[in-house]
Amino acid sequence: MKMRDQLEAEFPEHFRALRSVARCSDSAGFPDLLWEPIDWVVEWPRMRDTTDPGVMLESPRRVVVVDTISNELRYYAGGWYSDQSRAHLEDDRFMAEGSEQGVFPSLAAAVTFARRYLVDTAPLQEIDIPRLFRGRRDTDVACLAELAAQGSLFG
Image (cartoon, rainbow, N blue to C red; front, top):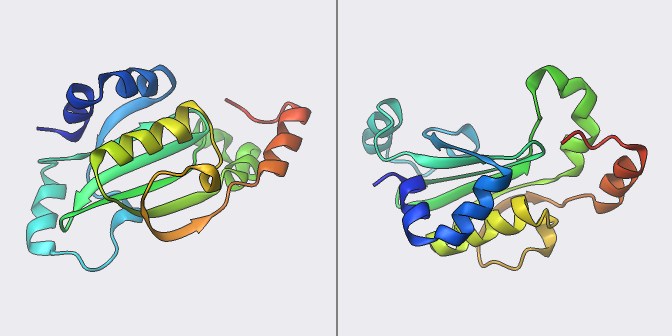
């Protein structure tokens, strides 16, 4: 079962809330999830053929990507451009959103985190969902507030 189908079946309320603010698509081979150890003999064909893909949830300002790689439920969360052609206009906001990558203990933790980050727009450092960090740059709340006051959040 695809991860997005599993999310919809097992966590329908969270999934509906996420779909209200974010586009949901399959994801296989997202670069920020490809840290060692990786069993490339297993993972490369899965990524190439997009069998058993993870999920990408894209709001106009933020993204969460979750995929099972080498038996770990890996994730990336961070700022996102509303449109690549606007990247030069949104760099300050993109950077202020912060970013994080790591491993969730369960799909329940992943979907709850995604809801807090994308629907509730919580700063990364305020989300108290259990997870193992690989790296994090905190959300710059003061910068986002300043950009909002200027009308510069785009999205």
